[in-house]
Image 1 (tube, rainbow, N blue to C red):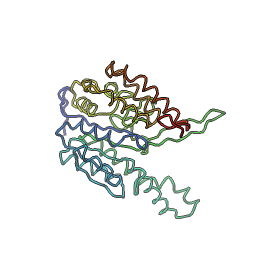
Image 2 (image 1 turned 135 degrees about the horizontal axis):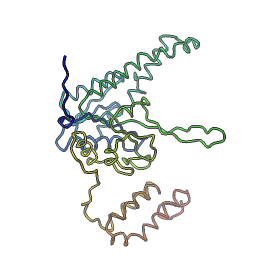
Image 3 (image 1 turned 90 degrees about the vertical axis):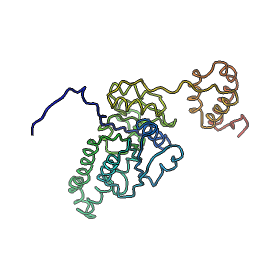
Image 4 (image 1 turned 60 degrees about the vertical axis):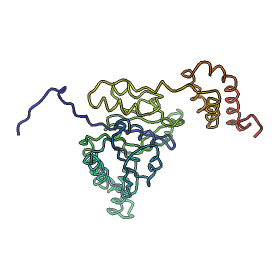
Length: 324
């Protein structure tokens, strides 16, 4: 077989596009993944969802148009590879896997498989278990690697929604303990994809690039995903344009939102305060983009709302300043 080579600029087919987004409980992983998928697929594109958490994505069926497959255990690696291949053959424009963590920690996933292998090889003999521990990883890790290699051959864009968890690393030699945020998956997987990042803990759907160890982005991707951005369809559209080799404008939130009245702004402030002072602070940080006249009108009452929220969080007063 002979090989021929062509200029890179002559390749116009979409490059493989894989996005890993990690978030803790209630960080907006699923919603953000669906917005990315819709942006990548376009308004009329077809989106497939592989749901590994008992159909949780189905509660978004009124907000997004997609086809779903609710996967039951065992969550063997090869099944994820088969699902991606099936979605590609069915001409879907994007695939969401929510949650991909099940491939690692779910029933029949890699960790569960390794434990079963160890039990099969050594039973309850502790000393034998120690000797057989390395061997017990052979089959599950080989299957995981085969899945990764298979996924890398796909041309359908895939968004991997991954659970995240925070742990504490004890300090050494008198140093303070440090908090570590980890993706619940194989530790190397987030670096196998095109783009990976985590979502903020306190605000749903916001990109957190505060720790350089927690994300992977090439230069162009840093123009698409910026720290503090709220994930939207525009991010997916920009990423898809990059994958096609097209010029793209950095993703920006819409700026043509209609003016909102005093009552609506008050309602937003009270809703943010009801979620806590962090949410209220985040809401206030967006105010400079709103009409100046409206800001002047609500400034005084906003300060009162903030003070009430601070007092409530301290456990002394209710939201309205009344004794709790």
